[in-house]
Length: 359
Image (cartoon, rainbow, N blue to C red; front, side, top):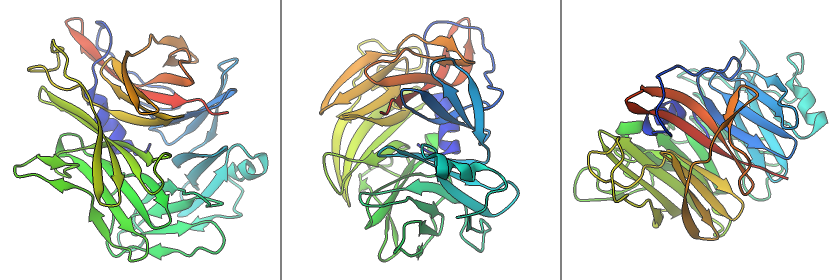
C-alpha cells in the first residue's frame, strides 16, 4: 500500500473512460490523492495525501476525520492498525481502529505506548510504515535504518545500511523485510532486509542490456506487494510502467532471492491512445484479495482467483459522499483515487484503487 510518492507517480500512468474536460480533483479532507483504503461491511477507511484518515459510514455516507499525520494503515486478520505521528513531535503511536480501547489512543492528549523515533539524517531516518508476519501479536514499525517490533520479547534491530524513503513494505516471516519502490520512469525495484544480519540487498535477476532482466531497480517500479498466503515464506510482487508510449505489467512470486513470473498483462490487438504501438497493458496497483489479487490498469483490471486470471472492464463509478466509487463487485470496491487530466480530445487520466471488503 503504501507510499505517497509511489501513488503520486502512478497518477500519470492510467487512462480512463470516455472524454472529459480537464479538471483538478481534490477532496476537502483527503487532498489530491487517496493513498490507500480498507473496508468492512459497515465502514470505509481512506488515507489521503493530506495524512488524514477519513472513516465513512457505508449506510449513510457520513464521513469523519479520525486521525491526522498518519503514516500507514495495515489490515491484519481482523485488526486494522494505524501508525500515526503526534503533531509537531518525534513521537509515534500504533492503535487498532477496530478495538475501542486501543483506538482511544488516537486522542492528542494520549501518550501511553508512544515510541520516540528521530527522523533526522543522523538518527533513524524516515518512518516508513508497519509490517506484520504470522504469530506476531502487534505489528513492527519500520524506519529507514531499522525495525522496532511492538510485541513483547522482540528487540529493536538496526540495519547495516539505510533503506530509501517512501517504500512499500511487506514481511513473510521474522527472517526479513521487503521494501518495494515506485519511482515511475526511473524504476524502483525490490530490496530485502536480512533481519539477523541487518544487510540490505536487491532482489533482481540481471539481463544483458539496460532495462532487461527481472525487477530491474533502474527500470521496474513496484506497484504492490504482499505475503503469499499459498506459499509460506514467499511474496507476491506487482510491477508496471507506462512511459513515452511504452508499457508493461507483471506479477511475480518472490521466495528469498528466487523470482518466478506469475502473470504478464496481455497486449491488445488495437493500441489505445496512450500507446505508440500495441503494448502490454501497464499495472499501476496490485491489491491482495481473498484467494488472489487485483491488478489495476487503464480502464480495466486483472483479477486472479485461485491462480486463474481474468481481464475485466473497470466498473462504472458513481458519486457518493464526495467520492467516485463503484458498486461492490465480488467483495471489492473500486474508488477513484486521483483525477483528472485530459481534454475533450483525449481520454481523461485517472487512478483507481481496489478496496477489499473485510468481515
